[in-house]
Image 1 (tube, one colour):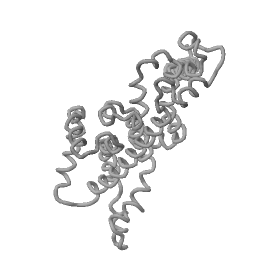
Image 2 (cartoon, helix red, strand yellow):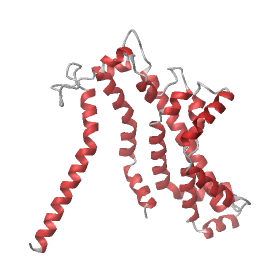
Image 3 (cartoon, one colour):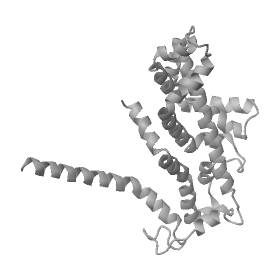
Image 4 (tube, one colour):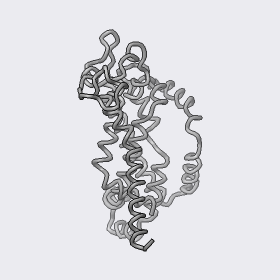
Length: 278
């Protein structure tokens, strides 16, 4: 076989493998969306419904079963509020702590950094009960703060920012200090703007992780008007078991923000990934 033919065959195999991987990745979401739009008598009975309808979404957003109404729209908004709050606090704290550990000389900085590294490998599930007891002792049980505060800081975000700021030239910051700029000014006017790509990818990962959280939210609240969509979806019992269409619709709503975020920030996401793996 000649060299051009081998190259053409390699490209065909490469594109075939990429197409197969794309189909495998997209198929579950396509099936989920089609089932959520299918007439109720065709849900889980036909792969591709004969017609599409929004009945499951309308039924869901109107409260669901009349005998057991559920605040689905409120749960969706709760998920957005909690996820955005945790993402914002995680990025803010991560950036400030990362800058302090990498650019501000103080006694014990190495000890703090090593403690963060150790804590990153500590199983978080072991802290579930102590965290719950602390939240209850503070009187925060069954509140929004009970869901937000324990997830407000991600150590791996601090670690990423610390390593990023270590690569920022000291000469750049020393020039700002010589002009009389404070460390606070240097952080927000010089260092922070350099983290655009990294902040985007960290924000996407933190938001995705928080959006998918279930176990802690199950423990933190009992009022269904405070529940996130994950918790409300997991707690579906009784008459909701006979409505698979709305179940698919709720699952589709659960994936919607993640898909939108990755589509909107796809370019900056690729920039962030290229930084992490370079």
